[in-house]
Image (cartoon, rainbow over all chains, first blue to last red; front, side):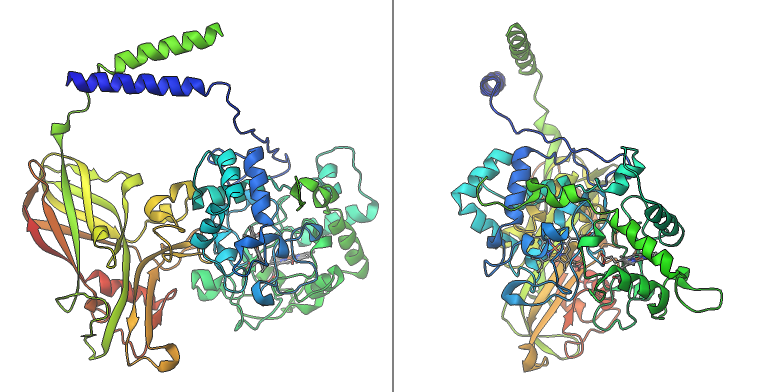
Length: 349
Length: 260
């Protein structure tokens, strides 16, 4: 018994000596993530995975790393391009390995800290688990997580970066996925003209834009709610009534009542993210408004807010109102974010 | 600098103190082992061996994996011991003999009257961040192939093999990948199944490590409440039928021999 105590004592002393030798050693630098005052509180718990300079930089490198795909040609950045507010410019369906087409239009990835669910059908409910989906999807990156990790573990430069960011000698899915969450978590887009206007930071909106905002509050805000411009729910806005190809939310919940419902997307940076809708079927914002006034297709699950008194479907908007609405939607463009080089791919940093 | 010295000195003092606190008494705890034993129609399950299900369909098996979690022991005196969350997830694999043996350490001494566990992974764990998904739940490690990425959640049970009743165009393969924790935010199918086994006579964790065998007869997957035919349903993953299948296979879990 006495022997045991002496051992414990020696062990604790050793621990103290090692610990004290670390005093003054360089630690990871915490990055302060500013929560926009006009946003609801974040969903992702940053205290479990605090964003550090090292982790963020590593997450960015991984985001632009084609090695994460089976054929070494596709990175997250191939489908989520900064100049297009992190969607794939000019593609209705995203292009993955072997130049295959996905069946859905890409979603932007900023403000992910604030979302409860991810993807058009909400199949993933924790930001950390998001990258596994594109990596293992046959027509996106078509890789396997364990393969990706062994490629990274075989690279001394990646091992070194993970050591700096997470103090680990070998890379596991935990650090790999946390690096992604740090990078995506830091991608906050909240500096559009609209934001500066509502936060009273000296920005003014024109008479047309203000009129557009009023129409928006009345006719669109019930779904495109809060300053995230989505209430995070799943709705059918009548973009199609042929669900054979894609049942949307029903594929996850298996409930008939969810057939053809898709996640209400944010409208931030909407100016840059054409084409629109889950199937990429609309090219311009004019097309979108024409859809809401004249194009809503009837089906069992189409949202009841579109039902007019006379029983027909649609939102009434005059030509002038449409013009003003579009002017307003363009105040949601965040040029600082689109041009912020800390999110860009560059060869040597 | 003075401050650092002061902190170090108090740490040394704390260390001295701590080394005199008696280490937790080892005599108050014991171990219990759960041994999973796989069968098909009461015969030992062997990969590649031909069996016949209740519908006369011949089959061979190549994969059997399932999660066992949230193990709870109930004592004769009413006490309960729940295996701590962070060491409560086990992936049992037919291909890995060691995985079929769960040794529960640190059990409080006493006479145990029953054991219960989940076949699957509870809904809370299915929605946690990646820092809570290490070890058995690591989707790139032990749990590889036991996780749906598009519909985030663990596959609770995977049973795969071949049967000549399945067309050549499907390479004669059958796949049963059963999961579903009830849904996040909106409810959906729930295939978490819980089993409780009462021991015929109390198992004492006092002296040696008793071994409780759990027999798992996979033939039940094809016939219990619902008839599942390979010919008709050779590929069941996410869908309503998976609920019928989990109701069937849970009936195949049975208390076997106990080595007191």
